[in-house]
Image (cartoon, rainbow, N blue to C red; front, top):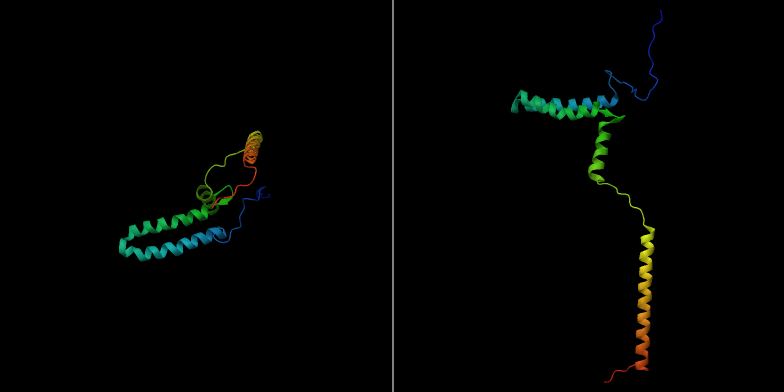
Length: 142
């Protein structure tokens, strides 16, 4: 009688286990949590009591456990947190789509062109009018 072993067809979700059926990342996070939490508990249990020290140790260690275990859509917790911080604080806001209204730009250019023509005509009339009256350049009398 042959014993069959199912082999998954999609190998993307498989991660290599290092020790105690944990990945390297999980071992690092759990080890860091233990290196921070246990000395914190031992140092504070006499000062604030055993129960309070245990609660403090748990509060300090839970974020590291979260980093070790939480994964969504193939991304670990720290990448998700990085993306959330970037989206909320570094580059906030909604990007609005703005199209260039070429017709409005053409109207603006035409309005400016007409204004320039009007000013040139006005300046030409004033120059012509002042030129006839003076004839010669004026000299200051002392």
